[in-house]
Length: 326
Image: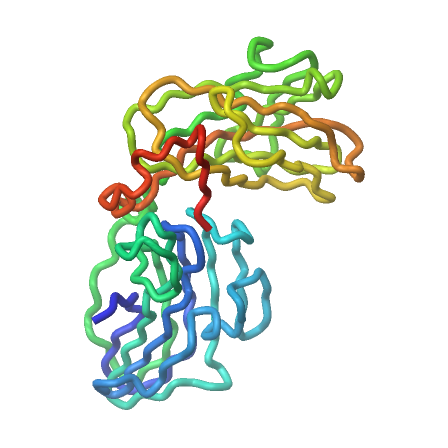
């Protein structure tokens, strides 16, 4: 039997009228291939079975941020399918209520795509048992009392654990030894509440546009290298280096509207030791008015335990062969 996320298991007579469904992904790629399966009045096989999670929320080809009276995705922290993507979706069955006379059981399959390094077949395909973080709220009307449900734990016990194995804040590196000639300040704002401000660097010239941030790795394990940077109308293009090795392509930080963004660079097994992340300015987007850079954090995000258990990439040298699973 496949894994399923249980949304509601109620006894009595009533109408099911809505679902709120939130997911934090723990694997790259798309999580929502699983169908909703709804069992009415003790059915052994569900009389209501969908064609994918996004279809239930009346979307297609994934979930996109939107809001309507009866369905929507009010929160989506990253449009790409990444490790750590968070979504919250809703659907109200106002015009299509699900009627039950004695019992209803609402579930979602936890099927989706999976990267080769965490798949026992060592290849990517769409029908995998994923292990993401799910939470849901069910809305229904019912005649008479319902059965007793599990007691909800205190809020502190319901907090999601951090996925970051290494987290370094940019604001701690405004000292001149960490950057080229220019002005380095801590910029505050609502988007930087977690860090109480980002490092904003305004280089005097393209050649002086560089930043270096050191960090340490304690254990050899599968991690994802992520830069949390700001994009804005006056930001430049920067090439990342790790211990002197070029990582990926230059990052274009120009955005017409200022926002904080995660740039996912590499999946790797770094050896324990000291590392330095360097960002060098290589120019700017034609639409940008300057070469600024704002760095909120460097993150090494953990991968699922099964990545370590399979160990496909454990001996791969990231200096010579870089990979970013999607």
